[in-house]
Image 1 (cartoon, one colour):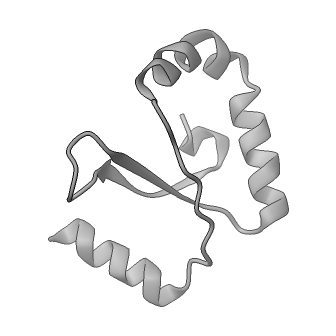
Image 2 (cartoon, rainbow, N blue to C red; image 1 turned 60 degrees about the vertical axis):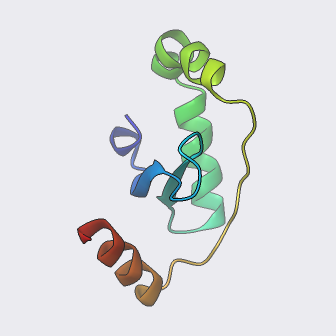
Length: 83
């Protein structure tokens, strides 16, 4: 669903240190585009009517971290996924 909204999923999965923790990494071309795409995604009928309640019921806490996705970081992520 994220990809259908034009949101690039860079990586996702469980934490290596705690099986109860998960991460979702998304890439956006700019901060403004991030805001637009997330507003469209989380404001969509599909999200609100079909997924929102079920997903939010699984989340106790969350943190958002913004980093610049450089080619070196992207290559590192790709290398981890291949391992």
